[in-house]
Length: 579
Image 1 (cartoon, rainbow, N blue to C red):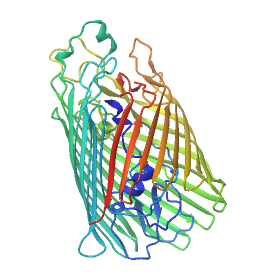
Image 2: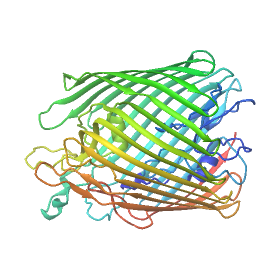
Image 3: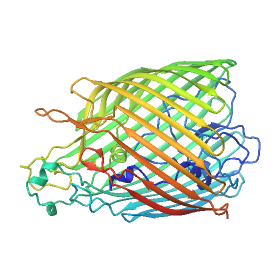
Image 4: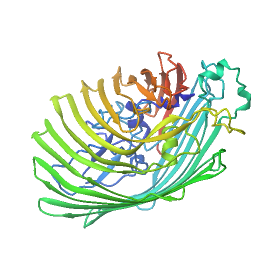
């Protein structure tokens, strides 16, 4: 079941460029992510505008030439996997060799374990030619692997999302409003191994958990004047154990353009109210309230060959944890520098940043759906994150990026299995040693990152990246469920205009699980995952695909006690269309 983490999404090579509103067919060297575009032609509404994916990398490309330009995000749906996307510039993706672009798409796939994937994306212009309305429906479900070794409980899952968007692009501004909902079902199927030698009665366990949310948001961006942008969002999240959470974020941004400098002032108010279910131990509901108020002033100096941003951040945390006030003032640097050592060939960058991360139940359940509905919540404070790196081109079709960074985080949240309490009466489905809680500690991380992207031709592209992490913690022996290393390899090959293939290999290094006060920490072995997609485009509007996942058929542990599904095969088709 857990193989939902290595998602059965179509390979980005055709998905990002066919399924969505494709970019101008004459553009070259498109990349997944954010691109600055000088809008000079009539605006055409696309799925790119209707549903944006925000990558928010730590290292952002700085505009050396600080001209005021219209910015919007190229919409793309990346291949989902167990591996977090590497920071830095993403590898270029292939343009549709048939060079036909459509605003809307429908996708349907079916695989073993009764896996079903369906998607429908629609965007249309309404009224003014600069106004658009869109909708995106996504569904993924599986009956689970009934023969998964060492798993006795139900391991099926499903997740569905429905989102709507209304927006408008004008010459001097743009705005949009969103509304959506999500529903999902998972099972706490990862029980302790000693259950199998004690003749444990698994029929007494109901492992089902359900999540849901409704969310609304709006943003307005101005291309002239001191007011740059404002975004507001609200999410209401709940589970099947009567836990509930509300989160409200308001973030206005201002800037003042000077001849060779830009002054930025960013504000943010982030309010979180979480009430968990009764934990079954003292029959009390844990409640958390946090209001993080942040301001980030900075000034950016720039010329044709460099940009330097000097600033600082201040966040005041007004918190209440289980009825006890938990207030704090956090001050952190906001310094970034970029230098064109060799224009368009070599760029050096460095910086010192920080911030406060709100740890919400919704975000934690998205990252690990096997968390218990009874968590300790508190914000993570990044005191500083120092980084330096270099990126550029070794040849016209070979790009690179290398980086080193060192950061200190207070109250970093780390997953750990909740221990099984044999004496607890009237246990609920997550109280059999099969759910995750959180451990907080001060964590220092030294990271080394590197990537190479080969763009041989329109037919072949290769991207490889690697990351090494060294952790030191204050109160424990190890950092938990944080990998020591990651490697990702992607190979795309277009055999003809109709036939293509994509291979992904991912490796995750050793991790640790907390062993308790009397037992040594448990080592979670490293693992690798190999996926292969073969696709055929019989016409400009149709794509047929067959995807194999976990081709090595390894039931590795993505989380402690949670094995993933073995070999999976998914086949399907995608249809692109316009009304």
